[in-house]
Length: 396
Image 1: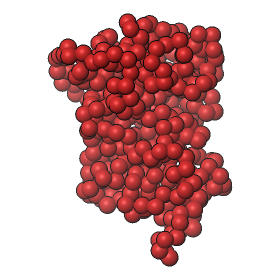
Image 2: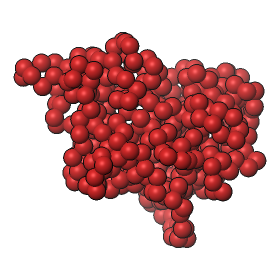
Image 3: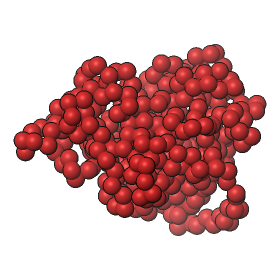
Image 4: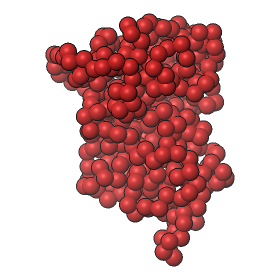
């Protein structure tokens, strides 16, 4: 889910969009042996790509997080949090946070701080709260997180609601864990200006006073928790297995924190592709140079190609296609990336993982979850020190 306005996002597409493609579904079933039990290190977290909490999610990678009232042992563990390299910071559905009270973060004027997080597919409105965030054996203490659809702030300001549709944290998920290239989700743009209209001050008195766009210091902005770990804080690695054509009902992988900080997160022979000031890399598809981004929160590889059937939405070729595009960093490193596209309507009924692709706005190329299949992908945070130089970069 690539963030807007500075960092575009594409929310996971609902299954209803998948089923609106060409053709009918298959009744064939696919069975997969249970994955072997893996002993994870303290800097590692299980990834599970499954049907989500609603049984309808497709190509959505989930992790489990624990949030605590800062400085206390009052904690809650929350599953099915979408792992998203296209956004920054933890966002939890208020309805999922039932066992712990998270204190409100204040705006500069002292009022409760709220956020209108913008994505290409809509917006997420909610309060900014403070929590200790635990991911496996790692902890980020007392960081700002967003509590989405917080009933304490029910009135969405028009400047937010006018940006699109409220998407909450996405269907099938209880939250979004943004572990992308940035530390904060707005950064310097929100320090001295309200123009981004990302953060809002919401006075509690007098009753009915509307929220107003606000500045937000870095310490109050929703923050990528990885950047505030005591160690292993320069980025992440996502490792997912290859997925055959025809899809699978479940896929498991590993999220590893840190790059070059421990034996389990070394770059090895991976090639580094540096990102630009907006977190983009250049992608060339069929001779067109596009702004590319890597986004595990997108459930397909998305780009515009009017020659492919079933547009807009998912492409549905009558037989699986192998396409390719080049991936080029600002450092000049280039790779030709082949990828497969299959008709989602022909996947077996229990498949929630497959090689999906679909349409996107002109000039953009979204390397969504299928890009991660069969790869170990490193994501280095902007300005962080790594053995391959400072982030931001991708490596694989």
